[in-house]
Amino acid sequence: QEGHVGHALPLALRAVRGGETVTFGQLAVSNDALIHDGREWPWGGIGSVEVTYDGPTRMTRLTLSRNGKLLAGCDVAVVKIPNFRLFL
Image 1 (tube, rainbow, N blue to C red):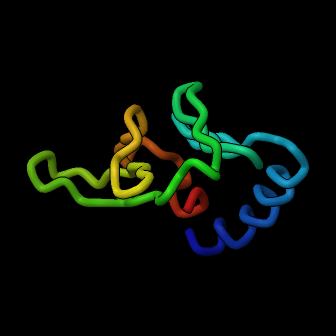
Image 2 (cartoon, helix red, strand yellow; image 1 turned 135 degrees about the vertical axis):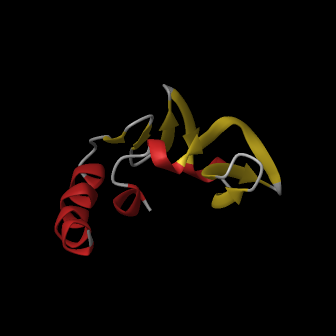
């Protein structure tokens, strides 16, 4: 997978910097925002993107927060994010 990320990362960055949106399943990345199921979170409004393990559900999740509070509506199981290493 390292080789794939190393090859795909420059292409994805070029696309985003060129004004395109790159999709990772339910998530998408544009130059202006992170998009989840059509809802946009401008980069300036995101304090952190966190990857955490939820013991009760035994799932690794990606969440967004600002000022220490989770942003409602963006909580995604990592297993549902294609090319997760590239996304990071």
